[in-house]
Amino acid sequence: MTLSVSPKLGAYAAIGAAGLLAALIWGYPEAAAMGLPFMVAVLAGLALVQVPRIEASVQVDRDRLLEGDEVRLAMTVRSSTEVPWLRIAWKAPPGLAPVAGSDLLGVRLPANETLTAETVLTADRWGVVRLSGPLVRAHDDLGFFRFDGTIDFGQTLRIYPRPERLRRILSAAETQVFSGNELSRAHGDGIEFADVRPYVAGDRPRRINWRLSTRTGQLHINEMHPERSTDVVIFLDLYSDIRLGGEGTLDYAVRAAASLAEYYLARRDRVGLIGFGGLLRWLSPAMGSTQIYRIVDTLIDSEVVLSHVWRGIDVIPPGTLPPKCLVVALTPMIDERSIEALLNLRARRFDLAIVEVMAEAFAAPASHEAAILAYRMWRLERAATVLRYRSLGVPIAQWRPGRPLQGPLFEARQFGRHDRWLHA
Amino acid sequence: MAPRVTIAVAAVIGAAVLGAASSAAATDATSVVGAVGKSGWVVAVLLSAGGVGLLVLSVTVAGPRPIGPALAMLGAAWLVGIPASGGLRPFTPLAGAWLLAVGELAYWSLDLRIAGREARVVGLRRGATIALLAGGSSAIAAVPELGLSWTPTAGLALTAFGLLAVVSLVAVAAALAWRLGPAFHFRTRGNHPPSR
Image (cartoon, rainbow over all chains, first blue to last red; front, side, top):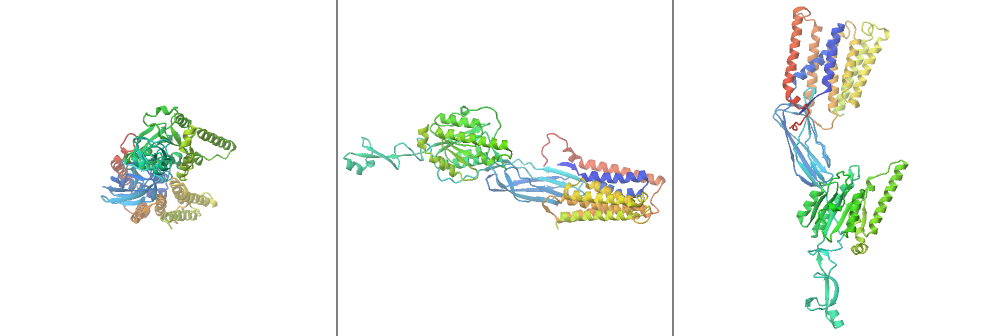
């Protein structure tokens, strides 16, 4: 524990010494009588002080939780010496907020007895949080010395973003060869009617359209759309994060990414992830429940790493962007490198859809005229970028944080997957 | 009333009582400020008011730093206000103890600034400590005032008394170093492991 001396000790010692000195210099014994109580207090405090021998342990009831969930921390303190005044103050790390104040103040801890202090924290923001123990502060009887210590028990808490319920989201323009829930544009075995065509040798008799065959006098076959899986790659822009009041664009982008990943994986699609920023992160597309854990574990480690290196999509490992995959980009469209990378993906004929996390919600203009003008120019530039994407056939929807994600996804869906190819 | 406010009010009232007594005593012509002139008592009033003001400041907004100067000003007001003999003069040890109690109450009220749970037993213990300190120190300080026959006033006995005091002081310092040695270890900067 760290020892520090209270200003009270210095004040008392100074008053006592001043009284004694005044008595000696001016021959005024009353000055000594006035200073003597303070000297007695100082001497008593110095003689009686004991270094507390505190042992403490912290228990956490869980190590993984969703945003909004609560976690309970309990600290058990024991001391082999008596602690006259003990304070245990919990400090909530970033991403967690205390639900109920449960600090202990001015508690006497008798020797060899245990004391438990509990706190309940609620998860405000996704992320990996390193938990630190509370501040333990002990005073001696007279408050002359302070002993401070913290418990670093080295436990981390993984807070996952709470996924939003989505009803329908973007479909890929092209499907893969594996079975899934997405209706393919191709014809084959399936349950959804697609077309009819004349019978050719080898066709299955049960697929003959008897009504049309009777009318035309020639055998016709029903054709179906097969249900196939799709490959979806979530492109997360990690170059910029506009923050205001403890929230930022990245917070919402990560929540949206987790929601999308969960939705696509639930319908047996293969989902991959690219965190495109100063530090490149990627996960190759895969399916199954394991993949959702991989994705959210990668997502909660997301952070903006400052970098001035101009980086294009050529740094993305081969295989991360499989052919015919749908790329859903979540970006505040601030950094030129991300904007260029997405344009480059489109130029390479990737099926691209963009959900723009609106940075305007986190950037208010200043009051003076020049700042207002700059703000307006910035918004114009952003509008121009949006138009540029749209002219290339990229569905882009603006998502105002705090509103349901379903809205912008529906807007992007209206663009139609067929239109996306017509523009390409 | 919250305990913190109660204790802070008690400290301020205690300081005001001491300041008022000092100011009242300063009207005596035989006091230190009385020698200055008829309006010498104003010095005691100013010192008392300054002390009380600083104390109010410290317990409300400023924190513990002004408490020391506040106590010094109140003590000075007493010393310059009491008459050369008689009157409040014999009560000086009691005034010193009173001043100590005022300081303790002020520091205690500041300790309670942080919101949390306070154990009643700690409050009682701290109150008892303050009472013990004030009583003990006033008793010690009152010994010369009693004029007992066995108290040394000069010569070898007084020198022996002084030597005893010095030896006691060294013993207290040694005991302090022995007890706080491990704690001081952590004050050094470096790659020490976190304290547990």
